[in-house]
Length: 241
Image (tube, rainbow, N blue to C red; front, top):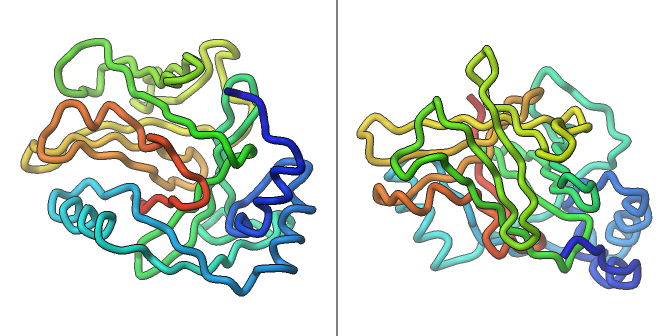
């Protein structure tokens, strides 16, 4: 793990990744190839995340199992102007691993009041999984110190509560993420106290990536949504605060 695929591999996959916002030096070549060759081709994506609402969880689970969603990429160039006053197609969000050998990149597209975020990686063939670690076995509470542990590489990210009650995620190695796209962890339960949810919030755009535990399970909510993650065939459903 941690080694990027060769440019040959990137070239083979470039026709399928025009929906991913890239910040790597090879992005311009990849996106131009994808745009020229297959920009009009719709892609199939399967729902892999649900909202913090029990009814929505059931509905999205059915969607995930029974059908795929047709989605055509509208990803703009990374040189497009950015509007920081509202979430738009010009707002790329990035999470780096501590060694900065790969990144998770999200791209928001507003559809019917919801935001659909495509998540990509520098290395197309890599499958990543992060696990949320608690300092006790009970439910998540706001006083917890939260740690994200990569299941394959054992890399650790720590999230500590600041004076504003927010959990900022930083590397245990570097102590902070160098990119401005710092993510914050928010935790809580729904009104019925049956559904604990964990959210990663972008500090600037206030976008949320969320993972809920289904049916009150105390296991599912400890994992943050990159289980055997497929960057080509997956996206997140999120909502703004």
